[in-house]
Every structure is written in structure tokens, then in C-alpha cells.
Image (tube, chains in turn orange, purple, blue, red):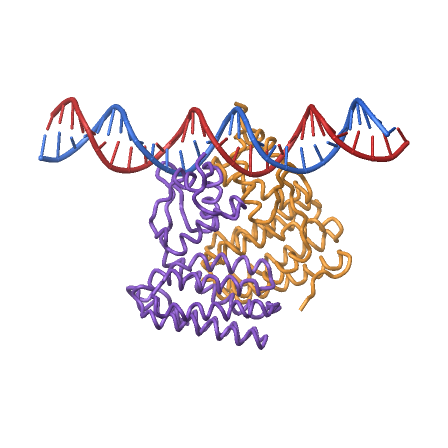
Length: 228
Length: 228
DNA sequence: TGTCTACAACTTGTATACAACCTCTCCGCA
DNA sequence: TGCGGAGAGGTTGTATACAAGTTGTAGACA
């Protein structure tokens, strides 16, 4: 049997799922791309069965769609659905602020600081995928601070459903500005966490999300999102 | 091949998933029950493959857990998780009230009235599963009134995660009271919908959920849910 | 009698063969 | 030249055989 060409955490299907999800959210698989079960099976060194499990989970997440006889395609982001997801995430941010017990360790704070530094270093490089990776890592770390487990799962799911849109428009935006926005959000959240002021953290996140929404709006033909 | 003994909508895996989910939520498969893939495959007249797909989806929903070499077991409701789900649902009810466009047709209103009538008829019968079925139907119908699609999916998911608890304690409660509670909730919601007053609907739902929570608390050893 | 081991009978996880289906191309034909 | 149908090649969906793992039990042995 062919040796697997990709290093996985050897946790089987879950690792494949995470890898494919990241590839989609980092636009390595752009919207409309066709994913071949056979090709993925060869690449990961497994049969089609585990690949299909991962793809079906991605289909539940709304990231791909499978059609018998045609193939499995990365879904394009539906604007109406995007609008609804963002509206919901704005509401959920407040809930996160209310329901989080703020169980943050010093290690977490250091990691966030390192992420802010990593983002700042990207200012000269112009590496959209790298910046997106930092932001994903940032979001992942903040997710761990959500004390309510079902809310955490829901927030993660919604994040990965909309994570592509910003990255997709990143090349058309002003690079330095976007880097600064990310750095500012991370550092502002960091300050809030140090004071254990989750309401402040929620406010910061909300502000940046609304601002990002505005930029996305201005770069799409016609406003797709009605700002409150 | 043996003919399938269960009438499915012939939509394949989705129908099997729904059927199994209902069996779990209506306690036909009580917590701790073992589900055999082979037995289910025989019953539904398919191979293990579609059965496994449905079971994996149920595992994502947190309703079952599979262990290699052991089997697939219906999960017992974890009290801490239940508490968190209820706390979240209370918050989401308000969101539903805010974000719903109240696209209700007269047919929907008639169906809700019929459900209230159906519940009232059960007052003499003492049929817990029937009452639960009515309440599930009621919830399903209200779900269609949620304009925000991701919120609707989330609300459904959370509902089915906690639907068993009330039914599980129903035999120990006062039957007539529980019937009256269900009838009152449906009719109160109906009144709110007729006035297109979604905030009132949310208030009713919230009130009944808190009351139901209190009853559940009183029938479990020690209060598991801190009421606000 | 108690304990430990080997094994049989089950389970889920994986790989593979086959069926159903779609799409594009090529060839015959008007 | 335009059109239409058969077919090849590819895809996902399903069934089945096999691998890996767990558990209870029977039996040997101290």
C-alpha cells in the first residue's frame, strides 16, 4: 500500500476532517473546486470509506455538497446565508460575554500575545493565508474560553462557515490596514482578558466584526448586509 | 433480500436518521440501550453502510456514542451538559423572538390549534409518548417560523438533545397538569402568533421552559439547574 | 475453590467490489 | 453542417468481505 504523503495526527477520520476543513477555509480548495474521493484516498493513504466520512461531516457543516454521479464540490458562500450567519454571530458574541467563566491561564495570554506579534510580523510580507491562519488560531484560542460547551461548538461551526469570505476579499483590500485590524483586535481582547472583563472582550469582538462587515460590504457589488 | 419492515420516505439515509432520532427522543431506545448495526440493517432492509452514516450523524448530535469492539450505545443525558443546553436555549428563545419575520400562514395556525386539541384529548388517556409526539410536532412547527436559517438548525439540534429529559420524568409527574401545561403553551403561543407579536411568543416559551425546568429539578435528586 | 489463560462470539472500523448515475465525446445520419 | 443517440469514462452510493478490538466464558491448573 502506498505510504501516506500527509502527516496526520493518526486520529483517523477526525484528522482528515480537520485538514480538509482548513484547506477549504484557507481557500486552498476555492469555492467550486471538485474534491475527488479517490484522489483524497490516495493522498491520505486510506480507502474511500474514511474520506467519505470526513466529506459527509463537511456536508453537514455546509462547506461542500455531494451529487451522485457528479462529484463533491466546495460550496460557494451564499450571500443570504452569510448575512444570516453574521447576524447570528453578532448576537452570540454577547451571549459569550455573558456566559463565559473566563477560565484563562497565563499560558493562554502569552499565546495570544505571540499571535499578535506573529500578525504584526506579516505586515511586510503580504501573506494572506498566513494572516488568516493567525486569525483562525486566535479564534480557536478564544473558543476555549467559552464555558458553555454547546455554545462553543455552535460558535466554532458558524466561524468556519464564514471564515472564507474575508480571506477571499483580502487581496483587494489594503494589506497593512487589515494586518493592523487583526493586531488591534487581538491586543484589545488581550487587555480585556487580563482584566477578566468578558463584557469588554465581547464589545471589542463585536466592534471589529461590524467593521469587517462594513469593509466586506464595500468590496462587494451592492450592500449585502444591512448594518444595524 | 429481505423486504424492509419499516416504511421510510425512501429518502435513504436521512429517513433512517430521523427515524432513529425519534426512537431515541421518544425513549423507545432508552439511555444505555445498545444499537446493533447488523440488526438495524436487517430491519431497514439495507446494508450496514447507510446505517453507519445515520449513526455517525447521531453521534455528532451527541445522542449516541460508538466504541470499537463494544457497540453503539444511546448516551445518558449528562446533567452538566443538560444544564448548559437549557441555559443556552433560554437565551436563544429571545433571539428567535427578535430575529423571526413571523412568516406564518393560516394553515400553520390551524395546525397548531389542532395540536392543542390533540393534546387536550390525551388528558384521559395517559399516553406519555403521544404527548411527547404532540410537543415535538409543536416545536417542529414553531421552528419553521424562525427566519434565520442557521439559528433554526441550531435550535432544532438543541431541542432534540434535551427532549428526552422531560419525557423521562413524565411518569412521575401529575399527568393532567402536564397535559394542561402543554395545551396552555400551545394556545398561548397561538394567540401571540395571531397578533404577530413574536416578543410575546418568546415570553410564553421562556416562561414555560423555566417552569418545566423547575418541575424537572424537583423530581431529580438535588437541584441540577440554577434558576436565574 | 479460586484464578488465570485461551478462545469463541460478538462488536465497530476499514478496504474493496459492484451498482446507479451523470457528462462529455464521438460517430452515424439526415 | 447540424443533430441525436450510444457508449466510454468518471463520479458518488451501496453491499460485502475482512481486519481490529472487546467481552464473557469455558477449561486447565494451582
